[in-house]
Image 1 (cartoon, rainbow, N blue to C red):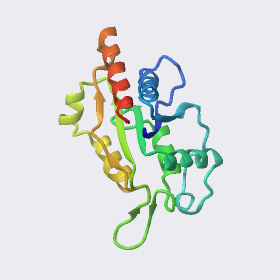
Image 2: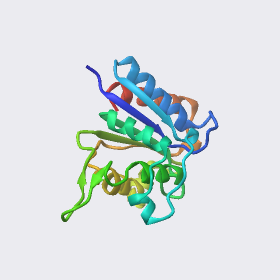
Image 3: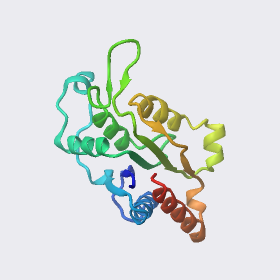
Image 4: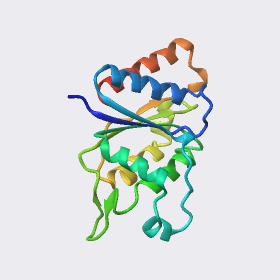
Length: 193
């Protein structure tokens, strides 16, 4: 029996030539070939409002487009989240999506000293592309955005985090190197994310 994998392509640009889109497609193909159930979200195609007030986060209605994605998040045993590094962090559209989708009552319960994660039993892997060398991001910049996503967002919700895949030097990759990354993402998908 395979995993249930939800692939979130977090690149905000709908242009088809983006490498993140190709990586997400490769992971989906690898997962399907290995017998996993796969559902996909290309975030650039999802229309939803950003939260602007604290009260909206806690008590505001969840848009129908987000409710449908919450069902996918709940359905999946594995999440694969892909995005380009923009100004040292995830793109604003992805952050806005996570704020809308991972609200109290769905993703975590408040009360007591610490919130209780309501999405336990799921595992997420994050794939990040960037122009700088991956080692510079990891060691010089301390991968701060990745740590925040792992600890402060996914961890808060009770989601276990697998080691991230960092693809650096994107602008300098040769066609052969790009093909190797696509093959690696197929393998990640085949392993269940």
